[in-house]
Amino acid sequence: MTEPEGFRAGVVALLGPPNAGKSTLLNHILGQKLAIVTAKPQTTRSRILGIHTQDDAQIVFHDTPGLHESSKFLNTILNEAVEETARDCELALVLLDHSRSWTPIHDSLAETLAKSGTPTILVGTKVDIEEGEGAPWPPPQAAGFTACHSISAKTGEGVAALLETIVSHLPVSPPLYPLDELTDKPVRWLAAELVREALFEELEQELPYGMAVEVVEFDETRPEMVRIRANLLVARGSQKRIVVGTGGRQIKRIGVRARREIEELLETRVHLDLWVKIDPRWAKDKDRIEELGYG
Image (cartoon, rainbow, N blue to C red; front, top):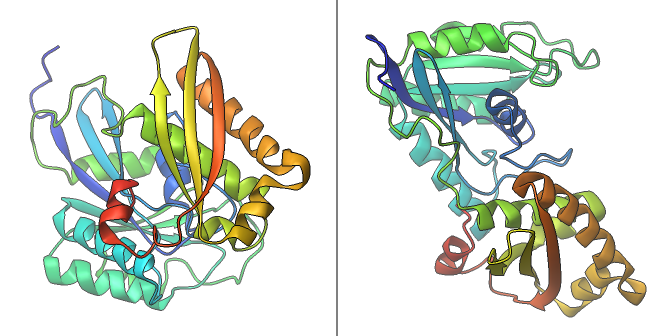
């Protein structure tokens, strides 16, 4: 297939504070679950590349971890990844939850993007949610942005108009990736993320934030049954006991939920074997963090 004259392509960064709706928007545009989504903030730990190709353009989205203020080593690494993406994109989308007010994080992003001269669209998300602080839209701080859009990634409201504006700001270019490609992430990484999503859904409070998932075996030799073995990394023995649960019931619930999602992704049966391992330094070592695919 030869792209039409005037075809556009470029990298678009999805930026914003935790839980602003970045991953939900990406999944809606792609029409497939690529980034994990939970009701808890700071779920995303990696720059996830999602490729949306249409007749006249290819948009390479970079979903980023939510930028936040924290002195923890892992959070510092994640913030550095966000800032690097903001500097290297052709166009940035800064997401603002309609039910919340402008934050210092938005100030920081706006300042970074202004210094780099990156065209920036302010996207008000979750317009389907009526409850909120009733902040004015667009906010006064939107004056410096290239454009403003209101959307709901849940219902699709406003997304088509947003895509039109995105395409209009991309350079004329051939596709950056094959037309049928959806992401640059390997399937085993996507499987690990779905296990991590199950951890967030099944475990309470702060424990999932101190955990990581490492796929140590991904066997596709039998297409009718993919076999996956993954380690759930925790910092302390007390956390291991919580994850395993009485009689192994908790880890079984995690496995059932994760296996269901992975089977939907792979469109085949999956045997998922989960083990809980104590690794107190995984979140304190940069090489280990990168080895796990975070940052």
